[in-house]
Image 1: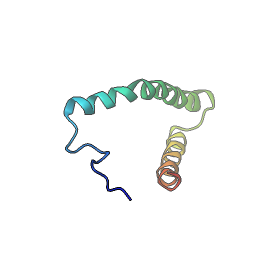
Image 2 (image 1 turned 30 degrees about the vertical axis):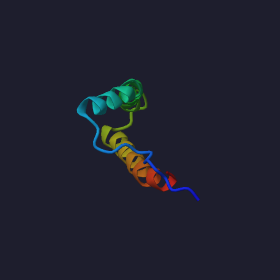
Image 3 (image 1 turned 60 degrees about the vertical axis):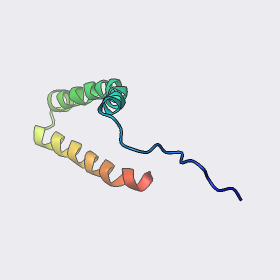
Length: 74
């Protein structure tokens, strides 16, 4: 049996520049999906004529559901 000589994970913390680079990597995806979320608010309240409170509650329930299910599913 061999003993490991070096760790796979680097030692130390990430630099600020690296943290910003990771953030920019996800920025395009977030902007794309936020466009749909903003449109959904308009669509539900003005086209479907759902009250704003009901639409907000629907979004809240979906976020709570995600917050519970995401850690359970991995």
